[in-house]
Length: 351
Image 1 (cartoon, rainbow, N blue to C red):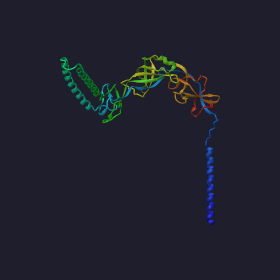
Image 2 (cartoon, rainbow, N blue to C red):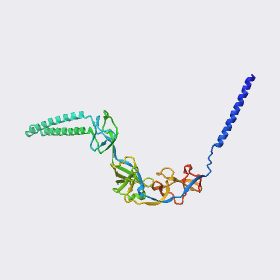
Image 3 (cartoon, rainbow, N blue to C red):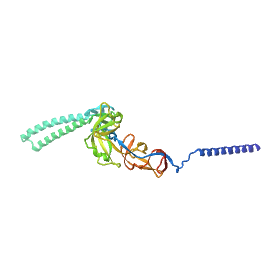
Image 4 (tube, rainbow, N blue to C red):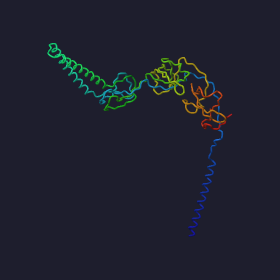
């Protein structure tokens, strides 16, 4: 009995010591944890918007799109018995891409031709009989109509036979194969995806003040980012009549591709006018931006607090972005340390 009591006492003491140790560790850990004080001012670096000169050739950015990209579909129905191209093949306009089983149509054409031959003989006999007034004019006219109907039916079958060969409507590259041999194809079923990049579309976003500098058919110079300063010639093909929420207009240009340095659809590029000039305007550093350049925002220091302010952007280059409206040259913007800020945070400017 005494032994049991001794063991219980020892166990109780051990547990008590463990509890005390855990409490001590917890207290030490809590002392090491940093507790953020929302009222404490965050040290940031500030600056004013500056007057900056932008080169117009760097102003209008976009991405290249294929001039034509379509799923080439079948006009007829039947089993796919021949696929003459594969992904990556370069094809010319009018080239056969695939063929459907046309044996039944060919048999129908042969039958139609035999029927027409028979009707022509009958029509000749009816014409002679009509001259001799052996048959009525109505019977002769019915025979002529039957012959014409058979000839129309033959033309329909010949068109159906032609439709069993799927042709390329324009020159390009096969970028996707959408069916396999033996597939049953219906009218409208896509066979391959064909992409034409002999010319490309480059759509740019132009501020309201610059849109009148563009005219449909106007010659432009484009650059692809991957080819640096190499120039590609093109022209303006479309000017939007409706601006977006930021008062920018979409302008589509058609750029001629190069055989030497080929532009691929999806590459980034820029457009400059052959008579473009530089522009000097109020600007902020890209380092100060919060979010994307499509919806630019900066933190402005007002009364010791960081205020998140949106502004309308215009021309941009690799370092600065133009301020069209929303900021003034007297505003103090945060250019360093904004990653730690929230709207209405207390801030302190570094000296």
